[in-house]
Image 1 (cartoon, rainbow, N blue to C red):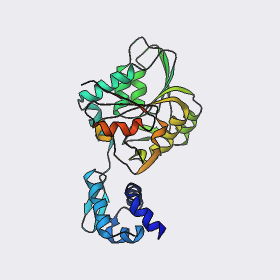
Image 2 (image 1 turned 90 degrees about the vertical axis):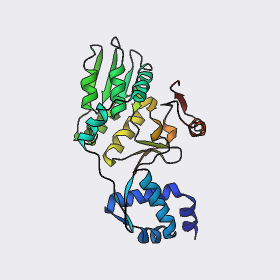
Image 3 (image 1 turned 60 degrees about the vertical axis):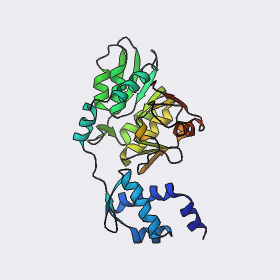
Length: 262
């Protein structure tokens, strides 16, 4: 009976496990999930409805299918999309970099914009798994670029695997700009891609100060694969138009939250 109570008391955890089952099996049925978690089918249907509304799965009769995966083309589309909020967040993040630092750049369109926003006279050592970020940073004469190799994921345009993790584990960085797919006060930092998890965790372990730069739509969101708890962050940079209580929950976790000015 204890497990039934626990499942009903922790809906976020149950939904996380539903996404993992969906990733593993390629399809989930409401009736089977109800038996698996010892809750009613109505409860499961509400879970699937919320996950569908969040864009994390595709509802079908009696259950759900995975949402269509992002492709490499989608990555370049994201990079090319004009987004004033991301641009301003990137500029705010770039101002935190100081000459002489070793800086880790996680993959992602926002971290790419941070790289593009760095002042020209900066002298740092930059480490990244993203070839696009490496090429951007290589244009700066004062920046030494270390590109972690491995298998390239066309969806994220970043390398991963043992080679990338080993290189990052040998780095002691002053600063990390981590890419955030989703961040939730209870579920922590999560990713859509399993292959990203080990690299992101290695980066978190290798940095003295971790900065997450995220837009409001990623706050409170959950993806299938857990990277780390929110406590691994020291600073979060986000946009101005966020409900105050949504910000306070992260501050109570000890994170410095800085918002763009209106």
